[in-house]
Figure 1: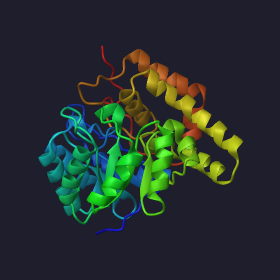
Figure 2 (figure 1 turned 30 degrees about the horizontal axis):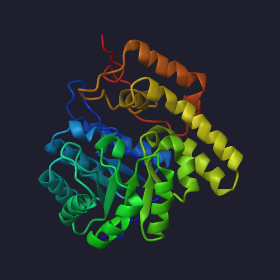
Figure 3 (figure 1 turned 60 degrees about the vertical axis):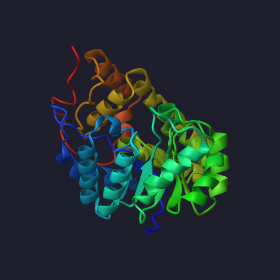
Figure 4 (figure 1 turned 135 degrees about the horizontal axis):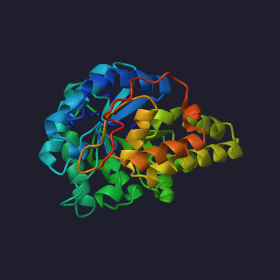
Length: 320
């Protein structure tokens, strides 16, 4: 089995679409170049930010293959293979291994939810077994799946029953559970923090790696935060986190994923619109997002690389 370890900032990429909502895989090589300039260590492909639930099985496989081919050795590629269907999850896991993914990750079904610890472990074990040479990461995101288990309790069961288990993508605000899980993992497992807006809390609880959507375009801000934290400069780290929170507020207020994807285009990488049922930003919301970020000099703050791509009519389209 591969001995992949995940640390540093890992971007959760947006899935690029054409104006007709078909996949626009031509964007990905330039996207990889942009992420390398952002100094992230990897890409978490086909997750929540990647609108995985709105993609077909074939599209998810094509997306994973495109990222693996474009990234080469420059980025570690983690392929999200979670699905409501166990058989589809296993097929995605097998394909991820065949293309040389560095790791796979899976969240739990969100319709017929696993009822308790045993069901979660068995579902995870079956997915991991479909990619027996690839590290497996459990994706904890209870706000979306409705599967509420304490990871500190689940962790030893995954260690015991899933031979390829190597860590957890922890996307939840329960920092006590996060801290206990990090302690349980010690130096042998990666407990990746998944809340950009409170990364400092994760660092304080022992995080050495994080996965997030805003690392796509603002990784430099977080790297400065991490640098200040590592140097013991708590005041500088706190101020940096507050600045980041002010930048994230427009995403929360103006549509979540749709606003976030629009900001990606503003930052230079055009991934098109979000797929239905998610609606594009209204003209007013698009202008408000830009205005609120300009008011805190956000785009000047994140300017480090040249960015890639050009803004197309797709990414700036508005609903009527």
